[in-house]
Amino acid sequence: METGIPEDERAAADGEPAWRALPRGLLRMRRLLLVVWMGLFALAAGLLPGLLAGPAWSAFALLPLAVMAWGWVLLGRNWRSWRYTERADDLLISRGVLWRGETVVPYGRMQLVEVTSGPVERHFGLATVQLHTAAAATDATIPGLDPAEAERLRDRLTELGEARSAGL
Image (cartoon, rainbow, N blue to C red; front, side, top):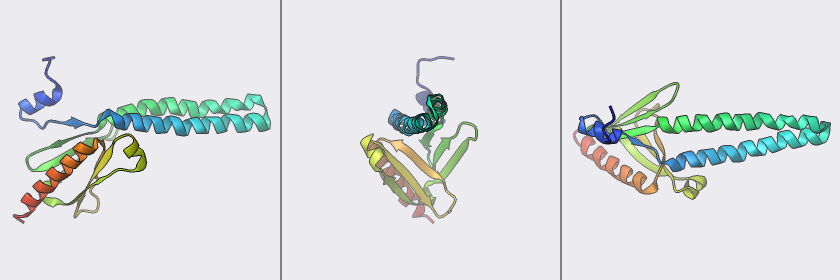
């Protein structure tokens, strides 16, 4: 039923967690990297065989272009699958298209909340939040956030982690 209220606000009003999606800048960055790398592969796959074996062999350039088209769609689906929410006692991260994964990180178990941003991420105005716990297998990463949101999330999670771990 369409109510005109965004899904996140409806979920929060119903008492369910308010999910936050990743910014569109992450999708733009990943798609640009796909186009650059597959464009270079298409150029190499078409130019080298075309020069060495004849012009008909330059049709090999179509293979990386097909991979690029397929990857464009898959990147969009993957980007839409990522979301996170801050609940009363933990942070919940959901991701994945074929294999859905959900990571629940209790605030009291967090040891370190790290914000990183490589050169490409900085160019696109993005940052990644990495949560470290005592468990070595924790996969708690939220990629592609706006730097201000990443810092806000880091500060909030650190504050909640300190408050929850004080009782341990």
